[in-house]
Length: 205
Image (cartoon, rainbow, N blue to C red):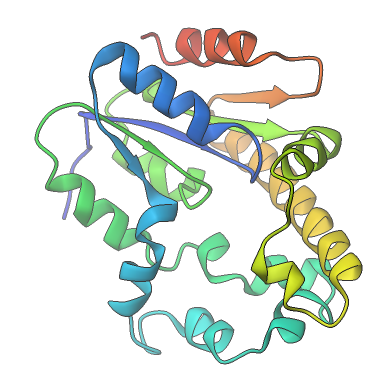
């Protein structure tokens, strides 16, 4: 598979940054579908092998404490399969089957993977949440989910995840700058309308 995906508009970024909300809002305004990369993780995982996705195979074999409690946040970042681009080829394959404009969103849309596929430098933006914004976003959901609650130490698991995701956001900031890609810092002073306006302007929609 070669060549840009000129029909795709990309919204990547850190967890809890508002990617899904903004993507849905922009898609409704334009009558476009949304490709939510989070929603196809299970399908993509089932289509990989230990040879094609060794980090994913190792991650699948871990228990919840191994995943979220016992490891250092930097190690969690370095070994998390989706943060390292495993399975991105399946995202690309899915999007090549879409006929017409589509908004792709999710944390799996890594800048280094997306850059070769851009039809225009204005076709992608990454949302970079501050730690306070991310914490508020997860707290607003009312639960940190099974990945935290099913560990032996939910508080430590939550702290590890927050720190891992902070490191991931820092990595995205560095990588977007290095590749000349667009990024927007998202903090607690921004309303949804503010963020939607900034993303719309960045994407020239």
